[in-house]
Picture 1 (cartoon, rainbow, N blue to C red):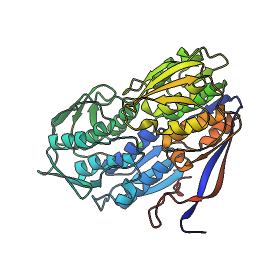
Picture 2 (cartoon, helix red, strand yellow):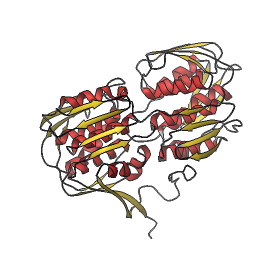
Picture 3 (tube, rainbow, N blue to C red):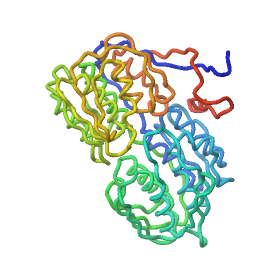
Picture 4 (tube, rainbow, N blue to C red):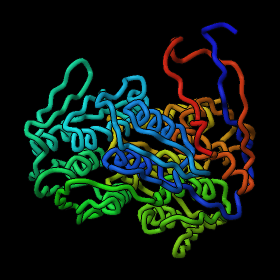
Length: 449
């Protein structure tokens, strides 16, 4: 094989089949990753249940091992992390560049070991990922922070971090997590204001409390942390993934199906269910399930992404794909990331009528036209899910290149969709290399059953 080629795994979607039945969602990627990072704070092993089998977890697994932690699988979805003897405070660039959530290790390393050197975050290219609010929080806790050669370097000035007052200029999930992770072992009380209220941040707070931290207010816009001297190991279940839940529901809507997602938290998807209902779809719910019956759709809607409890930016792409199938005109405005609509050109290859405004933050969708299968490429995780939703609704076969993106956020998505009657299969072939030879390649972690 030519060195400029590589084996490419694609997803083949045969559209035009109504999805029906029930399926369980899996644990939340955006909760599991910071919780894995938080395990660095514990002086005894941590066991996590319902960890999704995705490549982003693989990267975090390898990053924690590179820092000196020991990890092992305890069965499907269960891992144990032993960070008793961390040997390093510098995270390798080859791993951090692949995953924005890898930046979550700064707070634990700084809080427990007094020093952290971590490359600036990578992951999907969705727009600007500034670290200034992270740095603000670390300085407020008594750390010295600098940037050099692409690394953020933070170290304590005194023996430990000290409690402080931190008010973010806007809610930031990443900065809230890092500030919380750094503050739990600080000397004194820390108050975080205007913080992110996402369920995944609340879950991180619950995990820290289970380890012995004194945290209150997580899930609201103000968190109070009273520092403790040490944290202990614990067993903990990761919350269900609301983005996967929403994606499956929207796939049901796009195919005019009848889909129930079980083992989810309906309260985490209030904004999404409201917008689906605005389109005329019947939405019902129980304690841990949501059902959509999409035999009748009356029209489109208007979407404005916003921090929780608003409409989640990570469900904007699959929602837009569904709106392409709904009659009438819809408007989607993206307020979180400034480069989120890169996938729209791929939808246009399938016949979608979507116009993005000059500011690149607003899309006008003329729905109701038939989509047709086509070869497309996923530019990021959620855009990949959007192309899958569109492929399920389209006539003919859609081949999606870039399955490695989808695998970063969805645990065997094709199996969940197949259980609902979708015609979705993996296939492999040869395609031009995207990365130069010798770069780090990530595969699904082999040690997690």
